[in-house]
Amino acid sequence: MVKHIAILGSTGSIGKNALRVIESLNSSSVPSAKLRTSLGDALCEKEKSQYAIRDTHYEIVALSAHSSFELLAEQARRYKPKYVAITNTDYAHRLGELLGDMDVEILAGPDGLTEIAQLEEVDIVLTAVVGAVGLPAVLAAARKGKQLAIANKEPLVIAGELLVKEARENGCTIVPVDSEHSAIFQAMQAGSCQEVSKIILTASGGPFREVTVEDIQNVTLEQALSHPVWDMGPKITVDSATMMNKAFEIIEAHWLFDMPAESIEVLIHPESIVHSLVEFVDGSVIAQLGTPDMCVPIQYALTYPARVEGIAKHLRLEEIGSLTFERADMEKFRSLPLAYEVARTGGTTAVVFNAANEAAVQEFLAGRIKFVSIVELIEQCLNKHNVKRQVSLEELLEADAWARREVSEAAYSV
Ligand code: MG
Image 1 (cartoon, rainbow, N blue to C red):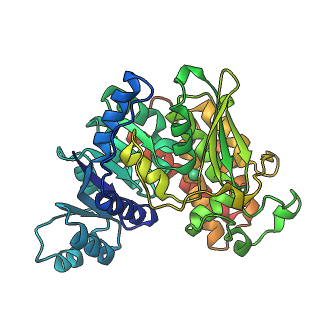
Image 2: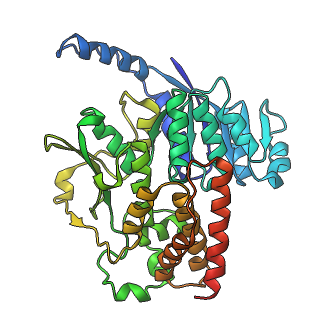
Image 3: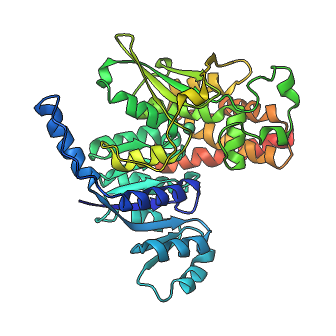
């Protein structure tokens, strides 16, 4: 079997890891072991179909980048896609020069993303495009009924309602790549949706887990940029320090798993080994554990529903010794109670929540506002917002622009 993949955002950290995963999937020799048939015919049928997936070759049809044209050109030479898209048109010409001798179509501008996301020959669209620029492409892939592997938060946070509706109507399967949501998705395979009573999202707690409510008032930019477990870009690291990333994950889970906000809990787990848990109606809790390595959720999104050998280091619990858990501090991390409110209110609140955060983090990284002002500005912005419901993508983007303006204006008066 051959599966054709388009990667939106192939030069970022998720994109690069996805290419490593695909290379390893294509190079691993398929074991000639006999199918196990111990648990009856039903399981045997499932195993047969999964065995076919293990035998899959993954062909890269399209790659995209925003402005890293040199790396994109390198990737194009190595993986030989039919299409490459560069969203920043300033670099299209130089990309063209680098790939002049190759048989590859170059698409420039944000529309190029949408074009590759809906190519007839593409089976799986993996999206890791930061910001709202990838949204039309993600919606287009859903409308075409592709398998959609979503790595960045924006599609589900900003356009969750719209995206899930399109996916449902057009037979599109959404497989999350965000580590917590991949964990929940995997744990959910243990029962039916109706049997789930609660989702428990784990969080490392970020660098300020042990800082008091008083001391968090005076934390510096440098302190906010040091994350204990995951090595990420500055924006995402600040989101982890404010716990806005977890706030977004509550909204993501709400749409992805059709769960009311009240049934989604946040649990602090500093070791980041249990990636999330699902509680079923009988009280059983199923968790997914593993070393913190994004290659695992990326690979699962590509091979789902099968599992194959991967490149991530295997977990050795005896080396870790103990796993700890604690309640999330809703007073210190105001982002969390805000997220529940946003999930309950719906409409355009989530897009405002996301855009206000992006604008406020920008102000913080530029040294113009204090750490605690990030969430204060978001809250002010949400309070001023007139919620609209049943909106189109255009109206979502209008609300996004409004929130950014509000926050940058308010930042000057802080
Ligand atoms: Mg996550």
